[in-house]
Length: 373
Image (cartoon, rainbow, N blue to C red; front, side, top):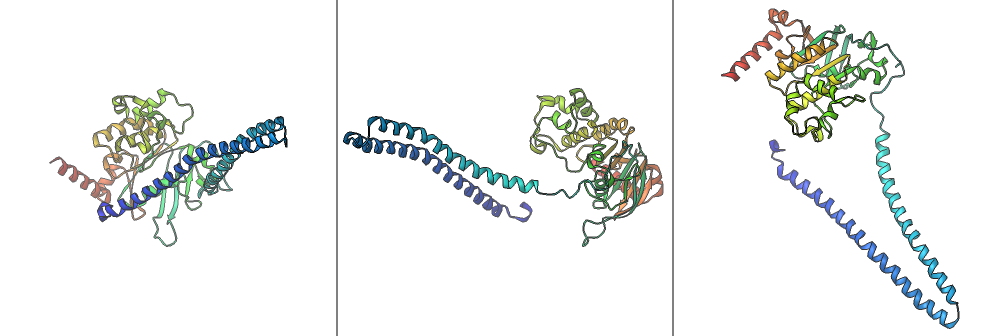
């Protein structure tokens, strides 16, 4: 809003909505405040009228004192049920309105769900294949990925680098089916990802996306999210692997620190490391780090990578990054440009080739030198 000089307009709209909300709540409070005294007044007035008129009838002999007393007792017994009936009607109407909103949510069909062809598969080992993968988000948009052919063996560490918008994150989203790939283009252990039950496929994947989401719970609960009956020792182990241990020891409440909605009490780097710890905690067969170290400094990055290498050796690891320092130790580095893999090889092979990767490496070296000077 600041960039477009719309602060005053947005503040005015926000104030108007707040005032409307406050006025409606005040109106409701006034009605509720008036109802109870009015109800008591009418009940009391009713008793006065009954005593006056019923007394006259008793004096005239039109009814006995016993009948008059009986009528009063019945009336007293009826007052609370009638009041309760009014409360029930009010609660029913409010509950119906809430139920309509809930049903509107429940009625939404997920865009990605188990396919009719999905069936139980053997335990996932982590071999990934992309076969002539072409993808566009809709028919009017250009292709995001074009002819991706790549085989990643189980236990291999593969890195993806390239400029922003070259399709790296889109490619990662296909593996846990955050996005649905075209049939037969993305396979895990030789099986189309569409043929896996979603729960089975995603339970084998530890995914750290670019946008980290944390819940308004303790740090330990955020790390252990998705793991049943996680012990504190396991949480501490995952935090150490993610380079979060020193930070946690500096928190007054340690792992019991509340992180706030979306991790508002943590820095960007701490959020990313918490997400990495969460992914590591699950001990997945496939680990995906989608630019997961962009918010940490180079020293912290090297420390985290050194601790992660032991974990990554035991599983298939995919790393997306803009930093060469993050990917240089990968078994295979793929350079994406305009949705295609234009170069692939190890760090040394790509530097010797003198192509896009070497140019990116030289630019980053120059930037580091300028920043240091």
